[in-house]
Image (cartoon, rainbow, N blue to C red; front, side):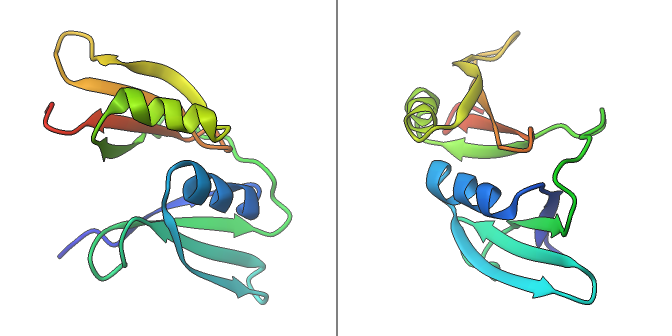
Length: 129
């Protein structure tokens, strides 16, 4: 077994694809509309789906926002340098919600950014965990 994808419901598919592609550097791997079900799926990631897990962005037609609830945590991405990753996100118009630095009660360098729908994404500096 292996993890294939994590699904996130998004309120504006094009805006979300732009964030994951242009701000975080992922590739749009595939996109398909389901007119009978009134939804569109887009898969984004850093590598082909056959090689690693990806994100499934689900847009339910006519729904422009969701309550994230208190159960969702975050998506974690390994980065070479969390400080530089935050600077790139900011330069590309993204929102940094926790600046890069050592985590509380530890030495691992982390940071948090937020996608357009409010989903949190953690950067974990490579070699620090």
